[in-house]
Picture 1 (cartoon, rainbow, N blue to C red):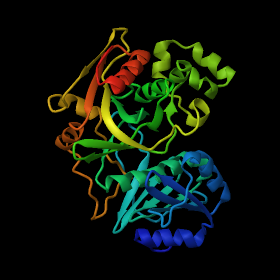
Picture 2 (picture 1 turned 90 degrees about the horizontal axis):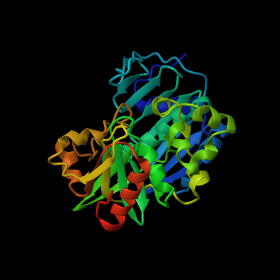
Picture 3 (picture 1 turned 30 degrees about the horizontal axis):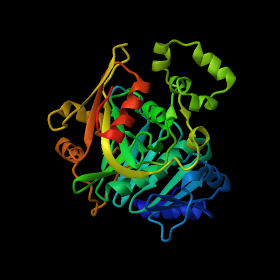
Picture 4 (picture 1 turned 60 degrees about the vertical axis):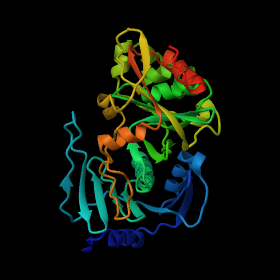
Length: 364
């Protein structure tokens, strides 16, 4: 029987008593120390393999996460349903706000996440849902950065010759695909889908998330560096599909950066000198690129702006700027912004991005 507990602190303490977490993993995310503790050594081993680029100890940790492998639990709480995202119909999550944090329950998997005030816990069939545990750990880091004054961007990121480039786009535009095309030319990787951006006087710093790129088969088939991800049978199956079918296909693979591109190419922060916004469509037209002023192109801001979502519960000391269009426009005024329009051409766009980082000029 679950005891009557109505605080985040009490629930986390109860989980630690019921499933003692005696195995540790220390991670270091570019200035943020995260300690993960688990009751099952297999969880630690799996997370150690996933986060191999970021294993490192720094005391005291900034964030504590305990991971408790257990059967799916039924908690005696009246959860609120989270409405599906726009365009979706399936209800995936429910939540409950507590005086000192929040509980989120994943309906499909039964995973439960309790978080707030630097001490957090995941409980349920964790090994079977390791991706959700990874996302939970990364979300704690995202919240930590936002509360230090960053804005959240829906963007990928790369580094070329010490200069950071953010890559944003409207749904399905291919920002991760473009990032990986640029990496085949020697760039380093910063982030796949989220960037935290900090304004420093007249400059920006961008911070990435320690999550492997999730890419579709079309991206793999058009990038020789990625072909090893697919088996021979998978290559044959996907190569039989049309370009249109590949573009629409919802089938994702993790892209291990070390195996595909080499070691020491996953770096979580860089000075952000430019933002490329992919406002193109797969229509066969020529790709065009131009510099834009975000103050006069508010229609492009939604491509970069990102809601903090259900896993963000700021404390009283949180310094994140109000996520308004005006604040995003002001932030992005500190870097160059490029708009790619016309038809989709990842090779041409990759060359244009690198040329701009090298010279500060557009040449498509």
